[in-house]
Image (cartoon, rainbow over all chains, first blue to last red; front, side, top):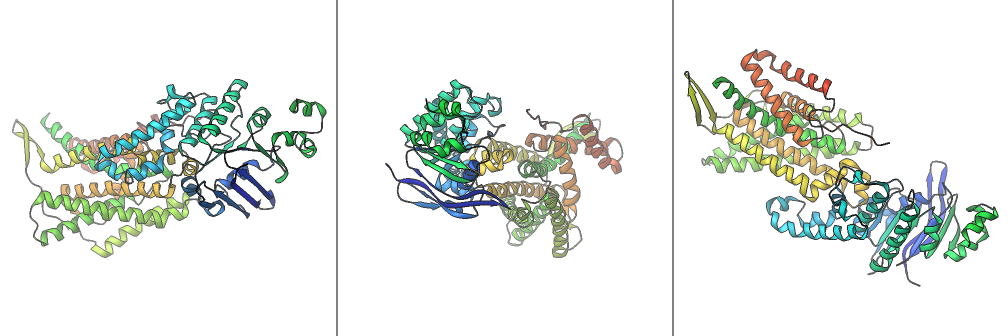
Amino acid sequence: MSDAILKVEHMTMRFGGLVAIDDLSFEARRGEITAIIGPNGAGKTTVFNCITGFYKPTTGMLTLTHENGDTFLLERMDDFRIARHAKVSRTFQNIRLFSGMTVLENLLVAQHNHLMRESGFSFMAVLWPRGYRAHEEEAVEKARYWLEKTDLIHRADDPAADLPYGEQRKLEIARAMCADPVLLCLDEPAAGLNPKESDELNRLLLSIREEEGLSILLIEHDMSVVMNISDHIVVLDYGKKISDGDPEFIRNDPKVIAAYLGVEDEEVEELAP
Amino acid sequence: MEYFLQQLINGLTLGSIYGLIAIGYTMVYGIIGMINFAHGDIFMIGAFISLIAFLILMSLGLTFIPLALLIVLIVAMIVTSAYGWTVERLAYRPLRESFRLAPLITAIGMSIFLQNYVQIAQGARVKPLQPVITGGYTIMEKNGFTVQISNIQILIMVLTVALMAIFSWVIAKTPLGRAQRACEQDRVMASLLGVNVDRTISLTFVIGAALAAVAGLMFLLYYGVIDFYIGFIAGIKAFTAAVLGGIGSLPGAMLGGLIIGLIETFWSAYFTIEYKDVAAFSMLAIVLIFLPSGLLGKPEVEKV
């Protein structure tokens, strides 16, 4: 049992008359993989958008705590400050790479803040290129580490748009990791992957958790991913939390089975082998 | 041949000035997808700041020309950048989330404002500057016709090439350049990776204004006279150059600038000087008919 890295308390998000999220509270614990699941339109991506500052929640409080005790109230911060100071990174359901830039450049953009500081807003880089080059090499080294981990090193200088779908997904994760996050939010990372690729993804995510001690927040439809790797699952339906617990508990929770998995027995069988 | 060579030199000089201004248009278009119509007037402001700085330095008794030029260049770049930053902050940023035509209209308003502001503050009359850089070289002499390249022409071309080289390097290799390209492609994603998008856009305007200030100084030194209206014609020409080269493309802006400069010069030399603008704009129309995205612009290919 570890402490909470992200605490969501009484979060509500309204779009006009539509209540996308209704009084949601949950916790994501440090060093664990927390999955958010639910039927289509349950508000999962909206939760992510609120956490990463893309939307401002109508009410509620989102507290992120770093290991050293620094706390950030995410609902009060601009999106780039959330990435920069609170160190939350995310990926998207529909991949959002900088398609005209090379794979390596995509990873360097993620290290923008560090490099910008070291290069004196790039002006010092013009005046004194040698001093800047060392930092640039450090950033490239880090990018290379993640490219090797995701098996993309041979594509480093290709335009990101030329990668096949599965590799673009991995590149998005690599890019998020280059931003040095403490919390990684993955929005359906396994969507559109074949079984072999989603198996690789499982291993990548587990190794990120083990080796980097990172906390991961995951939205996923692919139950083989969710049940295999998550430590803790939150189930949403119509913007409300209907269940919250470990995979074993979720699998047997009648409310989840009724609302999310449907009530037919075959489907339940499939998920609880 | 001699005549041709002479016109080539003149055309390249003019083209360099257009190219420097065109970069400002193309960069801003690239990052926020709007045409900054006030950019020509930022160039005019740059020329005026240069003139004022020169006159102040001369009245202070600074007669060593290279040093004076360097100081004027730096002062003009800094002050003009401040104008560029302010214009963006006041007229464009508040409208960033608005519909696309709104900043276009404020840009035209800003352009008119800047022209009138300079007209009132500096007067409507033409402002002369005595030749600062004189002399030149005779490249060849034949049939009683001499081909000359003046020192100021050399300075303009060398400075333009140097600035282009530095600038291309900044865009390709520095964090700022990468952030600019990232914002061009996906502003939201760049922001989620911690890039301060507002600041990146501001810096784009600042760089564009600094280059326009250099162009303004060059214009002042080359022609020796400026008035509050030079920004309009030069701005339209540079905008044409940016579109001709493929708006959004930096090498395209430079190439477009050179082409417009050359066409204008050659047309005035071999045909009639009155129709030089017609020739330049016709060229734009012809190129756009056959290459709708300009000479070096990449057509948008949407993957489905």
